[in-house]
Amino acid sequence: MPLDIHKDTSYGLTLTVARQSQDSDSPGSSVFDLPPTQGTSSISDSIVQPVRRKPQTSRLEISQPTYEVPKPPASFVVISGGTGGNAICAAFSNASYVLPVSDDGGSSSEIIRVLGGPSIGDIRSRLIRLIPYATPGSPLDAIRRLLSYRLPARYSEREARDEWREIVEGRNPLWVGIPADRKETIRGFLVYFESELLKRAHKNFDFRNGSIGNYFLAAAQGFFRSLPSAIFLFSSITNSQANILPVIVTNHTVTIAAELEDGRKLVGQCEISHPVPSDSKPVDNKSSVEDVMSPLDGMGEFISRRQNVMFESTSKADYEPLGSRIARLFYINAYGIEIHPSPNQEYISALSSKEVLVYSCGSLWTSIIPCLALRGVASGIARSSSLRAKILVLNSTNDRETDGYSATDYIQAIARTLNGTYQKQPYGLGNANTTYPVSAFVTHLVYLKDGHVRVDPEHITRLGVKCVQITSADGHTTSHNAELLKQAIKEISRSAEG
Image (cartoon, rainbow, N blue to C red):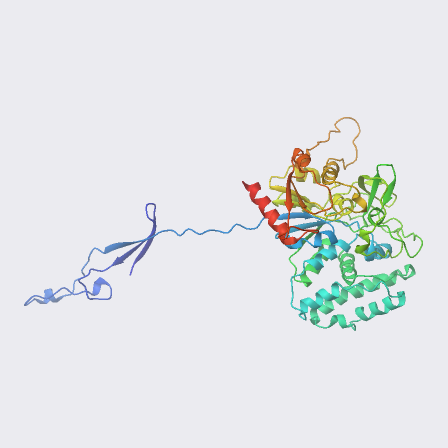
């Protein structure tokens, strides 16, 4: 039966079906239909003649269905550190996480002291946080348990080394439940890490407080000579879809310094944020080999490091005030000279393609500002045609870096940093620098009703920044909740669309 489909502008999609005459009993084509016989007929009359009939047509009108296409969730660029941003990760979907590579405390300090390379502690922390949920006892849960394990700080050096040897040899109970292919992949890189330490045995690597995930990530970075490749390997093994962007892509150690308003200078994140006593005197470990292919912009290798900085995140609650506010933060090379490294180009690209920028809660000067004090970032944020909202999630309390700060001080610190100059000054004329208004960098402030950081909504509104207060169902919130934050950001994004 012929079937003809054509578009009719007045009826939408129309199906035209050709069918035979109603008086025909033949189920087949009309060529087999016989004319009715009347009385006597001649031989010629008995010859079957094809009968051609004009097909009758009927129209079946089918209107084109209208579907309500669900709008995809907003895309995010989230600038954060390790611990501070981990608690609110569930508030974001389709996010690119930008993290600093300048942390020189905890387990990272010992890796940097002996092997060099960028700090991977914050990145490892976020990668662990973004591993998908797995039922207890499953292979993925076993991998999470291994990579998040930290050798106890209370161990003696010998005890820590002995347990590490059990792990690297595959004899430790932490390997139970991990499939053989992933076990040998992870163990292969831990063996590589051990071999690199043996080449530098004179430096006496201290395994106490060491993170197995840090060791694995550092080994992958050293093997591939690429931090993004190491992140990809970690994500693949853990089935994570996380998009982690180190703010600077380099194979060298990255060092930050802070200049205080009274003129003093503090070198390294540990000294700025949470100075802790060291187990030993400074050790001079200047690298003798430079990787000429690394885009370090004069960064060089690392400055003298103290051995094994034992730091627990809970110690940040108890701090000794700086005595003077931080005036600015900058990067330095191995000789203490200020430098201006290039940011990760994927970071700049994300600013031009994502819809919402979030400055996460966490350490302002050592987690957020290192991701802003780079050339090209200010214009990437201010001139982005895709960013509908630029949200600062205010800390619930201040720390050593922001002692005495109000919400306005946080906003002004971000704007002042982004309006800074991060390139070598040219000679002669033509040294013009664009200064953007505060609202070009921050459009919304999200803060807790019962937070301990002072907020002046009227003053902040005059800066061009809208204030959004978060209140829990019981009216009391003392720390950020991912679900409440998600709702607040959803409302901000919806209002920005209108």
